[in-house]
Length: 252
Image 1 (cartoon, helix red, strand yellow):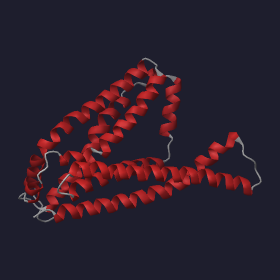
Image 2 (cartoon, helix red, strand yellow):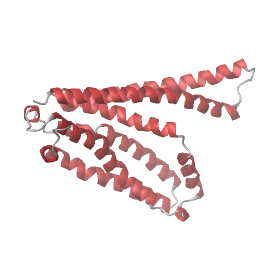
Image 3 (tube, one colour):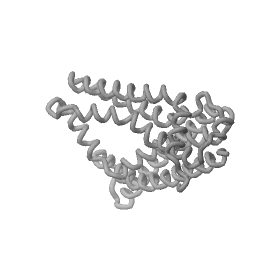
Image 4 (cartoon, helix red, strand yellow):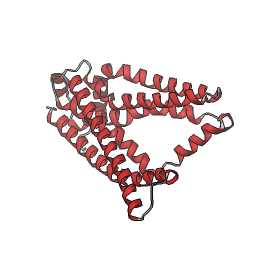
């Protein structure tokens, strides 16, 4: 880091800006539109549409975050990238800061600010209850959701930086595979939680009770999610390290 130059760091940003500018423009606009849609649903007390918009927003946010690093593959010129008159630290610093801080800020900040600006007096009772449930989510669940986004993002970035040809296609394929792994992991966690809850009831001589089975399964899921989140954290850090090595290796 002793050789780090802010001027060269800015030159890296200038080099990548032409391929990132549309993302920088459209990501905040889409976030604002999602926030305005949420605000209108709350004002009009349209709970059904609010839930539909919430599900759609979560899906869109996932796409924007996880496939965000593909912007580096647009109009890519690996030969020029590897010969930039900058150090690998300056190049890595910009790529990592933009991917893991810039993209989430562009996607989440406008939406969050608009949502926080909604007066509590305007929020219907049923929507307020939903907000309380979300705010009561344990810290482990919030951290897990963070790594659920971070893992595909890091995989996508690694694929884009690792390959010199067909970078866009590699990024999409690798990210799809990462999401498939997450889906499989979630299926295993859910199935294991239901199985453990049934085993515990069987050992206690308690028959299945519909009023308690859900809470028991949720409790088991919470325990398994901690393990799953820890594994995701380790995998994400490892992929980020491999990305660091790939960028450094391809920088002359």
